[in-house]
Structure formats: structure tokens, C-alpha cells
Amino acid sequence: EPYYSDKRPPCNNLCPSGEDIVTQLLLTKQKKFREAVDLLKSENPLPAICGRVCPHFCESECNRKFLGESIAIRSIERFLGDYALEKGWRPRKQERSGKKVAVVGSGPGGLSCAYFLARYGHRVTVFEALSKPGGMMRVGIPPYRLPRDVLDAEIGQIESSGVRIECGARLGETLAWKDLSKFDAVCLATGFHKSRALRIPGEDLDGVLSGVGLLRKLNAGKKVKLGKKVGIIGGGNTAMDVARSVLRLGKSPIVLYRRTRQEMPAIAEEVDEAIEEGVELHFLVSPTRVIARSGKVSHVECLRMKLGPPDESGRRRPIPIKGSNFKVKVDNLISAIGEVAETAFIPTSMKNNGNVIVDKYGSTPVRSVFACGDVATGEGTVTHAIGSGKFAAIAIDRFLRKGRKVIQSGVVRLSGRQYSDYVTRFEDLNIDYLEELKRPPQPRMPLSKRKKGFKEVNQGFDSSTVIEEAERCFSCGTCNYCENCLIYCPDLAVRWKRGKTALWFNYDYCKGCGICSIECPRDAIEMREVSRADSGGQ
Image 1 (cartoon, helix red, strand yellow):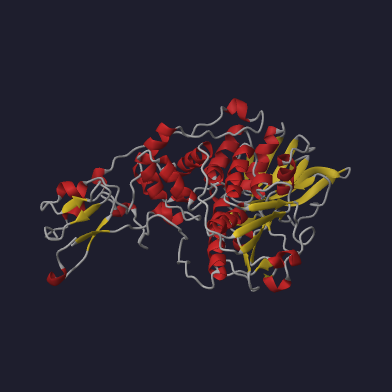
Image 2 (cartoon, rainbow, N blue to C red):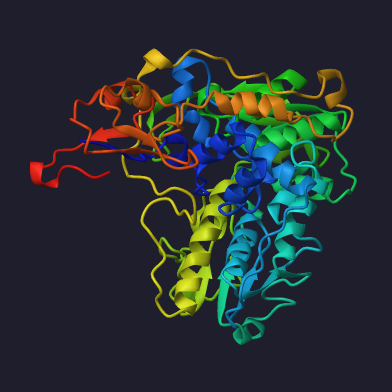
């Protein structure tokens, strides 16, 4: 007999923050924006931010790409996040638990943890070392990608849920561990704020800067003195942010990366936009030393590289080519090869080789102390940090309630449909009912205006475009009420529930022919064996 089975869509499966993307798109195409926002905000407190800076892993495995292009999921998320801000969305007030939790750090991980703890009814205080909340979202991402009014507004929504944020509280300095003892639980979410060293001769010379340090100054509105030619070492998002920021200061950025474009960890669109704007990229080169003249940087010496077998990251390992040394003329050199956690203030009982010791739920060896975000996972994206913060919040709530079991394996999801572990692939779909459709182009600020300041480059979709784009979604593995099963059933065994809220099978009429399962475009109907004694009903 047939039955409806919500299988796991590939987009849902890859979302680090655990969003129910397919249902969000279904509600969006039905023009139910408020319901879509409620569902989205039940899993992710920062959709307007994620809709701008998320690497959108969900789109990489979208089955739509085989018949057109992947759904513009990030753009739809941005629309819903902006809609929530425009309409003044506020979380529902929760009954207080009487428990108090401290969260140290107000980056995406800390804010996510605080938000979900508040939703569980706990009193939450967030301690932030900087003068304003937001962590690396504020000091590490330029405004042309993330406008500060959007950042402030979404943090404001979290505060409206009852979360209290204290700025200027740096753990180990103005905030002591004993100050945290009055809380029932503590979550560390201090992020990655320290640049990795280049470990080459001359990196301490005048004119060599860190990418994070440069962005921190620029995002604080401070002036940065740079020469005309600026070399940037790295291929990640920080390197692209630095290069495009330097370009907006009227300088000539030169990015030096030791692998090829294919291996760059930066978001592909950020690289495309950097090239469009005039950033110069050199691949398969690695710096070996910084050369000075009169005490200041004048050149960086590099070696050409070739790619060998994949390393532990899964990317092909760069191998130096002997005798291929060459020099690049630069007035400044900026290191953007990654960031690490600053853990000097963390007790040795919670560290191993400088890293915080955590289990997959964020628990540390110290009772009542948890950790989330980059300091716990090292993933380095806003979306991963949000998911990690949610994991930690669930674990803390369980701890405070003395073991109430709320954690499930796999992706953490607090609401929405519950999906099976089977991920629907393109070959599972019935493409006879699916047509090839392209995604709409991403609106962007004209190229001629981009380099004149730090105004947002990517513009959002309007409501009609968002609805049309959501309609392209296949709803993989999930019934979207297309009625194929109802139309093709020869026994009239498929029925609508009252109010057309769902479809159901009347097994008193069904003979188990399987036509409904075959004709389902989206792999939402399964067949199962039953004995005659068990047949019948609905």
C-alpha cells in the first residue's frame, strides 16, 4: 500500500543552521510570508544576515541545478529576513525558567545560543569585549556585504526576546571568571579574532599587516595608511574582503594564492565580484620572504607552485617548484591566510593544544561550562556558528532541566516537518512533470559605482521575483499538493482532508497498484508491504 513519506531534501540536509528550507519555499510561493518567517526564525535568528553572507551550501546540492540552475535559496532567505525587519517581527514571550545563563561573545554563535536559550525561558546575559555587539560580523565583514543597519536590527530582535547584552566586558580583563559563577551555566562563544602567522622572514616589517586587523580598523571607521600596491596573501573570504576593501580605498590589490581558483575557499560570487571590480589574482604562488628597502616593505619574494595529491582538507596539496623564485613589487603586504581562537584566558583544564575541548553538543570538561561557534567547531562561517549556538543552547537547556532529552542526531531542528534520513536525489524524481527553468539574475549595484564607497553591492529580490523563484523548487521528497496522486488514482482512493490541508489514502478503496508512487514528481510516496489482515483504513 502507498504512504506519504517526508524524505530529507538535499538543501535541508546541508544547512548547518538546520533550516526547513523546502517548507519555507512552499510557504513563500503560497505568499504566506509571515508563516515562512515564523518557521525560518524558529531555526535561525539571523536570516537577513545569512541571506547576505552565507556560503549557501544548500544550493550546491540543489536538484534543480540538473534542470536549470539551483534555487536562489540565500536570496529568498534574505527577502524573508528583511521582511521580518520591515514588519517588526518579534519572538513570542516564553514562561521564565528561573535559570540564568551567561554567554561570552556576541558573534553569530553567541547570539544564536542566547536567542534559543531565551526561547526556552532562561534569563540570558551576553558579555561582549568590543564596544558594540556582533563580533566578527561587525569587525570582519565589510558594509558592502553586510550593512550595519541590518546587523543592528537583527541583534535588536534578539534583545527584544529578553536577551541582555553588556559590551566592553573582556574575559580575563574587565570580566573575571568569578563574575560568571553567579550564573547557572556559561557558554563561551569568543570566535576567531587572531590572524595566523605567515611564518616567513620579514613578516614583522613595517608595512606588513593582518587581514583581520585591517578590516577591524576600516569597519570601525579608522583611517588606514597604505601604499599604492597592496599584496594580499590568501584565498578565503577574508582575503577577498581585504582586496575589495583596499580597492575602495583607491589602491591596487594583488591577491597571491598558492592553489588555483578551483581550490579557493572563498565564496565563488565574492571572487567573481572581486575580479569584475578589478582585483588582480595570481594563482599557484606562495610567499617565501618579505623584502624591505629603508626599513619598509618593497617586495615579496614568491615561489611558483604545482598541485599534488589532495591533503587533509580534500584540496590538492601545493608543491613548491624549485628555482622558480620571483619578486612582486608591493608597498604593503597583508596576511589573510585564516584566523584562530585567542584562548589565553581559558583555563588549561578546558584546552588541548590551545583549542577548547568540547563534545559534539558543546560541553566542556568543566561542569556547567559550554562552548559554541568558531572557538568550538573551527568551521569559520556565520551559518555554522548559528547551528553550533543552537546545539549548545539545547545542551544547556537539557543540563538546566536535569536531563530532559531534546537532542536528536544529525541536523538540529526545533520545529517544522520531521524528515526521514533518506536524502532525495535527482534520479529519484519523475522529471516527466518537471521543466527546465533558469534562476533570475542577482540584482547588483552598477560596476561603475561599486568602487566609490562601501554601500551594499548585492540588492535583494522583490516579492514577485521571490515567489517566482520559490515556485521553481521541486519540493524534493516532500508533498507539495500537486494532486498527481489524486488525478491518476484509478480507485479514487486519494482524498483531501477537510479544508484541503493534506492528502490521505483510503485503504478500503486502494488496491496497491503503485500508480500514485510512480506518478509522484517529487518522490514523496512510498510503497510498503502489508498483510491482508492489516489492510484497510486510512
